[in-house]
Structures are given as C-alpha cells and as structure tokens.
Length: 277
Image (cartoon, helix red, strand yellow):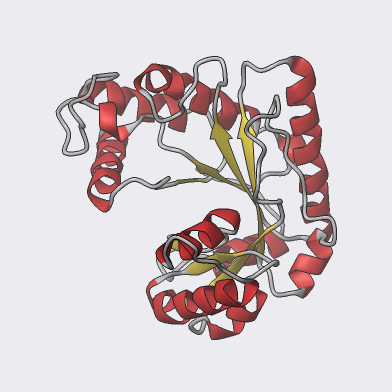
C-alpha cells in the first residue's frame, strides 16, 4: 500500500512508529470511564479527582512507554504525563469530548471547545486522534453532520501538517447491543462501509483506527469463541478481514476494544492468515 503524504504528516506518523515502522501505541485517553473505575476501586462511597487521573496517567506513561512506540493521551488530564514518557515515544492527543449521550439520537460528536489542532500541536501532539460513533445506515442528516465534522478536523490537521488518526466505532441503535450476537452478524459490513467512506480524500484522514470486522466471541473454531452463539466460521472471519482490508486505501490499525489478549491475538492471527492467502 503506497500513500502520498506531506513531510510533516510523514514525520508525525514515523514519530508514532517503532524502528520497524510498526505503530504499537498505548491508549490512555480515557476520561469519564476511568474516573468511574478509580472511584469504584475505592469502595461504595469512593470518589476520584482530577489529581487521581493525573497521577494514574503519569504512572502508566512512565512504566509502559518503554514498551510502546507511542502513547495516546488527552489534554484534559494527560498533558503533564507527556514529560514522563520514555525517550522517542510518540505522542497522540485526543481532540474530542469523551462522554457521549447514548440516549440522544445519532450519538453526535463534539470537540473540546477550548482546544484546536494548533493548540494540541503546541502542547506536544505529533498526531491528532478523533473517536466518533458512526452508523453507515443512519439518517442522511445525522451522517452529514458527522461527515462535515470529520472534514473540518481534516482541514485543521492539513493546515498544521500533522497526521489525523480517525477512530470510527460502528453501532446501530435499531439492532441494539454492539457486543451482542445480532449486531455481530452485521458488523463486517458496517466496518467495511465506514473504512470505505472515511478513506475518501475529502476527509484528510491519514490513519484509520478501526474495530475488528468480527466479534471474536462469535467466531466458531477459535480460542476466543464464547460458545454462546455463532456468527461466523473461522473461514468466514478470514473472508471478512479480507473484505474490510480491501475497502480502504489508507493505513489502518485494529483496536483491541476491550478484548482479552488471547482473543485479540487470535483475531490478529486470522487477519494475518487473510494476508497470506
């Protein structure tokens, strides 16, 4: 896969990769859910503060960045942690608000209002990351809002000559639980359509951070299989990896999305087999 990009974007992507050109990034841009997790760990009446978040992110950055090529942080709680990273570790900064209202139709995205791509770069970002929920079959008006949103961010990143990492998460409120069997059967098509859409030059996306095209729990004949229903055989899963990879002209990274190490590695092996065939 050959992609023509500017020098600044090229340097930014290389800064996030190891000496083999592999991006092995650690995501620590969690906010609301991390606050809740820290509070729960403290018992029934536990609480978590901004100082707790900073301490956690700084400790994780210091301990784990020697094992990573890059770290993804947020400007709300993570800026001070940047100084604790291992030498030569790249820095991605999140630009979106982290808390989506899942009860609001469309799960519309929003940016941190006091930040811009310029300000994130000045704060130390070598790449910009955006997470956005996207249903390729949603109402035209909803998806038009999201498409314009990505276009604006792409233009900002182009203006600053910094790489744009887009993380589109698929969903469909009409089907329900994204981790359930019903959605698993449709997921490959949703992921492929999202990868195709945001590979278009108009968006200015340089790297896609995408979900696995299958739900590991429902792939029969794998270590990840839960036994609670089958959405695909192992061979069908291989085919889904093939189809989604061919849907994009952009480099892409698979997200573990909360999978166990065993399940995620098993699916990466399935994806690797797809490449060899």
